[in-house]
Image (tube, rainbow, N blue to C red; front, side, top):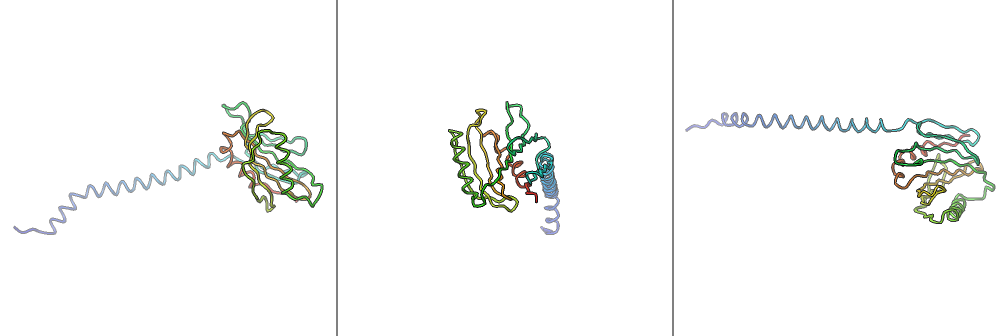
Length: 202
């Protein structure tokens, strides 16, 4: 019997044409799905990124961006406070950031010595004060110190805090992010955006 190779190839292709078509279709669907996932996540991130406002303080010589849903207030002792909205499961604000400005009495005082003095003060005020880390950082091209610690605040709530200390034009700048321990990581990206936007005014 004569076997036609062309016929066998044609028969094989015909039998597997359906499988080939299905494979191509699946590849296209996966490709489209992946594109939708990427676009969806990008859109989701954009939607959830807070709208930022700019606060400028010409007296204390700084400006900073903050979420439009956060409450801003200026108090005594040259403190500017930004408070996150209360959540349904929290009796008080879950997080906040404070910019405090103090006069630098001597130009010979280093940021390191200022930081050590602050840590000593925190230890006196909070018996459960626990220093988690201490490191260098830069904000608007100014070198400073960064500390992370936990302590019970004046409202008897256990909080975690990030404190940045630097100097500019004979002033000490202390930027403090404080949040409930279980909410600390939730607001971390927003705080990073705020700190990144911080600028000293001439």
